Image 1 (cartoon, rainbow, N blue to C red):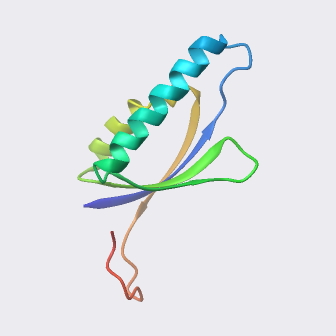
Image 2: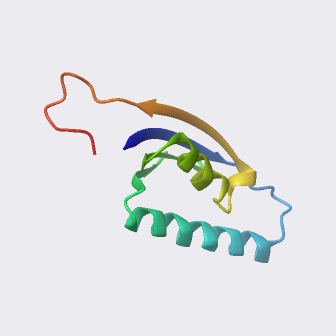
Image 3: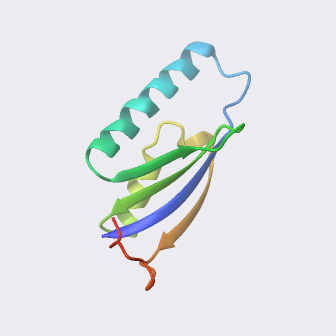
Length: 96
């Protein structure tokens, strides 16, 4: 299992039709919760005051993470910063 820290900064255009925006946001929530229930999206935290989050994904490969991210309904409006994670030798708990 590979762990990744992913920062997602979202910038939906202000002039995007409200019905389209609402649909995309609803599909994003449904997809992200499906991934959380499947154990792929193991943590998600909002960054205070921003339309951004910090998430941790547990996937089988970089290709799987790529596929997950590309299928996010909000992906076209995101800037992503992705960092692979490794277990630290001083950690007292094993990685998720």
